[in-house]
Length: 130
Image (cartoon, rainbow, N blue to C red):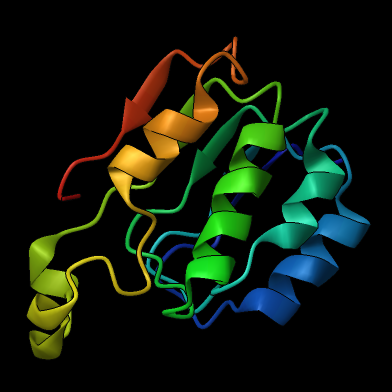
């Protein structure tokens, strides 16, 4: 079974992610950076095997509940060793300056939430976050 998948910078979306997660249940490495994936709750199905996850440049619905759920999903991935939720300020929409975390996982919220819940985490990329 496939253990590594990189679909970065493609038209991959939340529906595609759900199909992949349902059919590739042994994924250890997943890169969905710069895609149209805006919802990651299906990743809970990979909580026992996912070791590396790249969400660089993802934008979620600008709703506090959606962002909270995304953080909760991430901290349930108990075998995660490498996580990238970084973003480039240049990727933001010009109006994002009115609400800098609109649709982005806030670094402080993530750090406060994860605490000891990701004991295997070795690397965390939050660059470009506020």
